[in-house]
Image (tube, rainbow, N blue to C red; front, top):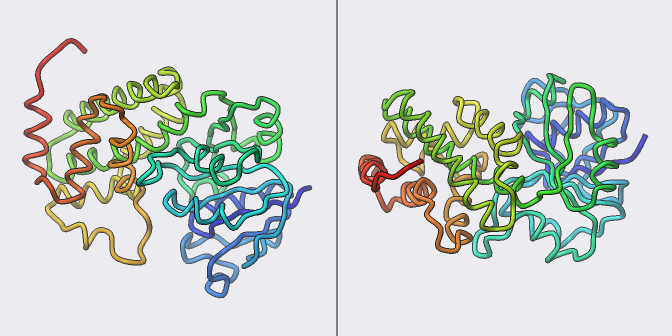
Length: 313
């Protein structure tokens, strides 16, 4: 039994804390406002925190630290952290302004601290309920991957290692952008054919970018790419899909992303992907970035995608 620190008491951090406690670990769940969390977290309704989880306001040293905060807050959180053990970064996206991936931000803020990323097709409420799922622990250190898989894996939460951290992180980040586009297609009533085409071309974009940044295309066809993409584009349980669906219905961004509401990672990830793209063609990401920024209407974004030159797949 180990003491684990989970930073971030949103739905995902809470689910990971519940899961770790179920495996017999003692868990310190860090929250900005611990007073609002009793034995149930309003971010994950219906889930009772087990006795093995204590909600804290201080960053206590632990055998491992799971960082489950929105990507745009990662640098701030890591800057105040002095980890005694390895980091498991449980956020998906790229940092606005720099275009850095989670592990790159960690290396910039805490150079030399061992770190991996946990990513894959996981809804928080299902992990908290102990339903079967799989995910990827990605990073360059094989021994560290194996140790963390042994630490936080479970028969119902099957973890796979992957040494392609770039491909795994890009899959987890870019799928949120594609999900916004897929939601917009469905919200506008354009049909399942259009959604399937959009998802497929979005996957091709992710693979193209992964290869350009030193990752492997086959990683994008695994759990951290295609698997996560299928889950996130499936319906309104995904915040990114739900936001896109609302845009497709003609609703305003201000109504879909109220201040203080849940973070929709794909909104910040779209422009960050373009920053990192190094001149590559990413038409879906470009359309989403323009759509959420209000620079283009949905009909115009669709027309722009359909007007692209035809070529072999």
